[in-house]
Amino acid sequence: MNAEHIVYKPIGILHSEHTVPVQTPAQPVYAEECRGVVEIFPDFADGLKHIEGFSHIYLIYHLHKASPAQLLVEPFLQKAEHGIFATRAPCRPNPLGLSIVELVQREQNALIVRGVDILDGTPILDIKPYSSRFDQIVPRQSGWMDMLDDDTAWQRGRRGFKPAA
Image (cartoon, rainbow, N blue to C red; front, side, top):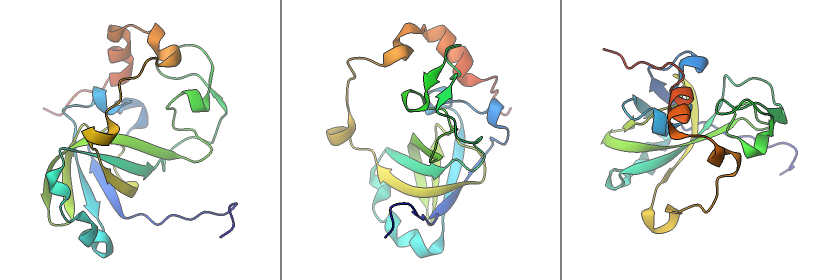
């Protein structure tokens, strides 16, 4: 395999109420009531065996509507320029997204999830179970994000999202 050319095949697609990027919550913590459905393609359905035993899963996906890559960005939380790798901005050299969502239930090859901050029609590349035994980390510092108060982060992170009535 040539390291310059890597190809991934989607295993499924995400269906959500989010269709406009600037109106989509910026992180799962701001999208607690947002539900979605991860439709796994039939060829990969066997890979879901026993996933329903987990309360949360990681979704790894292709940011199919991301702007072209930028190395310096002004993130939604702060009016200051940062390197792309010090942010979660979608305009990355490799447009990969990562979200931890709550797994509400499994229905054959569909996963009903909550906490969805992902656009409708997003290709899903992989799913991994969240495990508190391995993944629970209490960070000592969160860089420039530590300078922001919670209310401002909440307002900016929701990006005007209003749940459907």
